[in-house]
Image 1 (cartoon, one colour):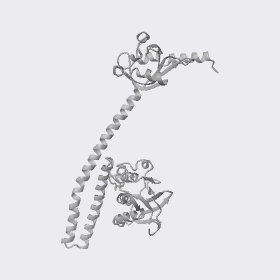
Image 2 (tube, rainbow, N blue to C red):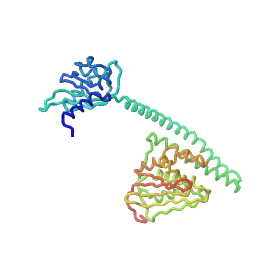
Image 3 (spheres, one colour):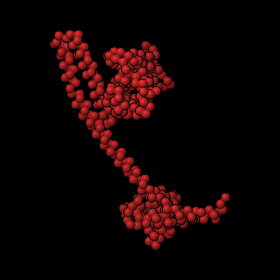
Image 4 (tube, rainbow, N blue to C red):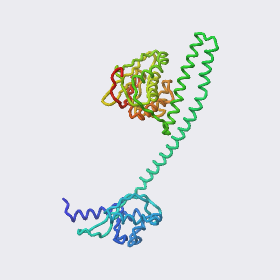
Length: 376
């Protein structure tokens, strides 16, 4: 064990030899009585230049003018310590960012006898913070530009959809529709509907980014939402010859939600399963309750998701990047929209996959309203 004399000697050596920390002793009048070599190094002034000077000399001119330079002593006098991260001034007038404290020093009788200022040059940290702020500002601008682009694109894409749909109806009413022509018209109708859903998703992504999407909640049966969602994608399920199973309990699972928005969620998940499951694959939707939550799983035997992609799968445009090699990618907005809409309902969505070629499973959890008996 060190005795007090040895400890004091080591402390003296520490204060005297460190160049990373400035230690400044100040009298009751706010004048500098002593500082260590670290302070001399950091502030770039020798002892004769600073001894007897007001401690405010270590502050930039603007801090002196607005009274903040002397405020540290006022706070330390009242509360014992003043913590500050601020700009300080070197002898040549240059500035550096300092992090430190001003301590009120009291003797054994509790009498205030002076102040001690300890600080460290953290200009590097300040520069990192400024860099991060600039990056955040740049990302914010990019996000706004992205929202503007998506809004403009969605409106431009929406304009030709109505004429296409009208033209198909006109052909059906006025032309001699042969079975072969009817088949071609059905393809146009399905693809037009797919484009319309994609455009609506683009609009919603832009509106979600701007905080303009409203969810009008009411007690609804998830069973019914799933039924309508399955009906809406039935043509493409038949086209790819998938087996689609829906496994729900006979008692309705009731949540507080917007039926249109929740249908949008499950149509996106089902479309995703159909798109990334090779022909003659299997897709299934299971519903149950766990505690106070409705739990809905949408699973498939499709191409799966690489492990490294799982953490980013709900980010905007991730899906498009991931599916390039499969040649069946979309814009990569569906899953991002799913997550945002489920979150607006107070729920959550997770994804699981054992890897490429091993299928995927998406689990949506939504707060239950109350149990409903069959036939209610």
